[in-house]
Image (cartoon, rainbow, N blue to C red; front, side, top):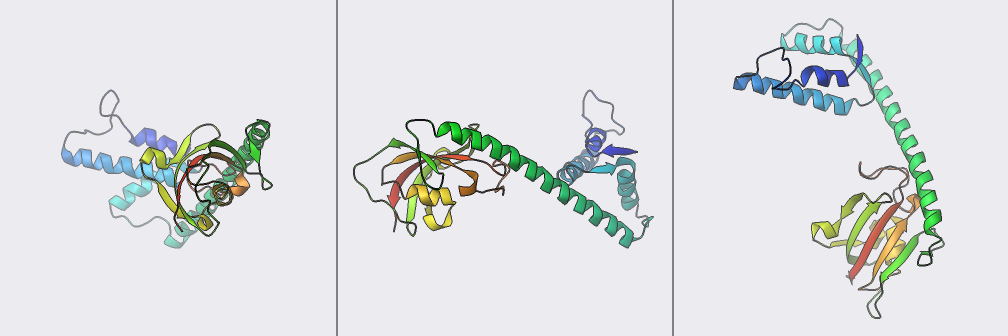
Length: 232
């Protein structure tokens, strides 16, 4: 029987109350075994997203392994099948990332086009957009070779926060040469004490790469940045 692996979660993730359990879950030994099985299924679901697995064959393999039986199929044949499945998974993930990036790029281009029409937005030659929130008369401006101390608050264009030194309550320090291009360019426009809001196109951020699940590939990123100090 072919079934999505999510069915395994239904079969294994039996509630301790209200549902029909195939086994008693009373002793610590039973609960520990249940917990291990639940963790196994959860981890396997994470590792094999988007793949179809034969649930009966999966459970038979688990049973045979626990009972110490010899594999019904040669190890070389099993390894070849697993490798083939891994290649399919990789291709599926790559296709999903490409589709995500295409959607994010389209949304980002629309957002930046509309944002550029605002009177308080400055657009640089590279396509970086920024808004001056607080401007100071004094203070040093960094070069691309300097280190800086900043507070920042990073969101996607839908407002979802993905990183924030403000929320952590601790400023960040870094070399301007070691961050995304939008930061390297933008922070050099600031003086100590300034606070800018940057709208960073994908090509000046992470492009089609995704540094974390919180930032889809192809994303435009929004940063509120306060330049606290030029360190070098």
